[in-house]
Amino acid sequence: MEFSEKEIAPLSSIEVWEDDVLLRYPEEDAPKKAKEEYRNYDNPERDTVREFYRLNHKFQTFDFVKEKQAEFLKFNKAEMPIWEAFDFLNTLVDDSDPDTSLDQWQHLLQTSEAIRADGHPDWFVLTGLLHDMGKVLCLFGEAQWAVVGDTFPVGCQHSDRIVYAEYFEANPDAHDSKFNTKYGVYEPNCGLKNVNMSWGHDEYLYQMVKDYLPEEALYMIRYHSFYSQHRENAYEHLMDEHDHAMFEWVKKFNPYDLYSKLPTPPDTQALKPYYEELIKKYLPSTLKF
Image (cartoon, rainbow, N blue to C red; front, side, top):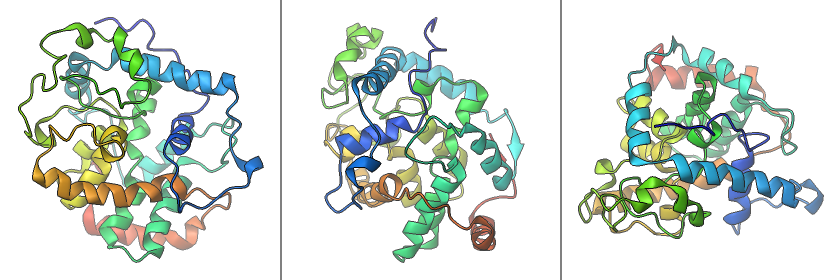
C-alpha cells in the first residue's frame, strides 16, 4: 500500500491534537485558564487539525494496522532503561507549542503527580508517568497521524461520532463490504480484546507493557484516546461486560491526562527517587521498543 502523503506534518506540534480534544470535550470541573492563556485557535491552526484528521482517516485502514503491528510489535528497534526512554522522548519538544514550554517528560510527571496527590494506587500513578511514552514512534519515523489522534476500531463501519468522520469517505475500507458494516469482521459484543484499534501510541505502549501492569492500568493506556467510546458511547455493540467495567478506569484517568498541564516545571530531581523505586516495582530494568 502506498502512503504518498505520509511525510506531511500538518500539526505544528503533536500536542496540538490534545489541545483540540480539550476544546471538544471540556470538563466541567477542570481547572479554568484565563482567556488569554488558551491557544489561539484561529482558522489556520484549526485547518492543521483538520488536515491531520484527513490523513489519519484516509490511511488508518485494517490492512495498515496489521502492517504496523507486524513492523513494530517485534520490539526490535531499541532496548533501553525507562529513564533513557524518557530522555529519548524529550527530543520531541517543539518550541512552536504556545501552551507549554515543558518537555514530554515533564508533562508525564505532572500527570502522575496529579494522580498521586489524589491518593490513587501506585500503579495508577505509574500509568500517568508512562501513558504517552508510545510517542517514541515519531522518533522511529512514524507520521503524526500514525502516532496521535483519536483512536477507533478498524475492520468495521466508522462511527459518525468520530471527530471529522466525513474524512472516512477517502478510506478504502469505507467502500469494502468486508469492513463497512456495523460489525465488519467482528461478532456482536465480542469484547475489545478481539478488536483491532487504529494504530498509534496507545496501542504500541499497551503491547509493550501488557505483561507488567494491572489490567486497569492497561485499559487506561490502550483506550485513553478512544473518545468515540468513552465520551460518545459509539461502540457499545463491540464491547462486553468486562470492557464496560474497565472503562470506568479509563474515564477516571482522562481528566488527569488532559487537565494537569501547568506552566511550572515539576522538581524532577526531588521526585526522581520516588519514581525510580516505583518503576523498579513494576517494570524490568530495560524495555524493548
